[in-house]
Amino acid sequence: MFNLYRVKTKVAYDGAELLPPWPPVTFRPSGITYYFPYRLYLTHLRDLNEPLVRAEFAYVAENLLLRGGYRKTHFQADQTTLQAVSEMGNLTSRIPESLDLPYAVTFQPRLTASREQSSPPRVLLFRELFLQAAVRKYLSVSDNLESFFVEAAIGQGEADAFEVLSEKAFPEGHVDLLIKDATPKGGARKVIAELKLGSATTADVQQTRNYARLLGNECLGAVLIARSHSRRVQERAREAGISLLRYETCLSDEPCTFGEIVSSLRLERSQ
Image (cartoon, rainbow, N blue to C red; front, side, top):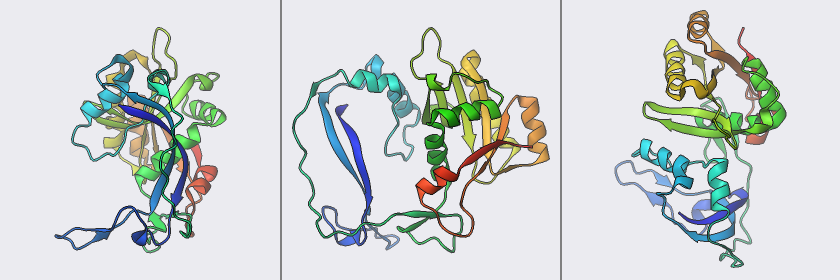
């Protein structure tokens, strides 16, 4: 594991196919040309060079092992990993070389539920990955997480003790959201949430139940979040002990920014 950085800002550039440092890439079989309009600007915090085979990196290493071969560019670390890395290596005073783009024009990407309105990179089709990111950001606010626990009939009063992580790998697949004790003490309480962009199915209920079984007694609850749930899905969920929540966002006729989607997001118990 090399170095520790903090994301300072995220930028989308107009006309990025003409900007350095990466030229556009054209794939021969399809003839499609790709370029990179989205950039992260980082602050370099610590210099470190540590092997991944350490107890402190168990959460990340497990995800890498179980997701081997899966097309994924990064894995989210938990609070324990971040705390450990924050004490490794040395603080750095070096300022990374910056890419000077004084005349570049930025834009705010938007998301849409309509394929007809989709026009990358400015307007992107709202996919399940965006829903996962929006719900994770929404639940990272303590009051929202507290309301989530109440709606899902899990409990209340301890939201501050939990952290919300994305895509935890299991031997049978990966759960979309893992909500766990940020600093476990004698036990590691966990809540899992599966997210579906449209209507949930009975297969989704079974999948969520399987993940809960893998966690055993430390699993406080399992939640299936979708736009809607059929009566049959509701019956199966009751039998399996799975809580059902319905989500709503601002996505309707007009595209929205990611921030607007998070601000408008509502999670309610499915009736």
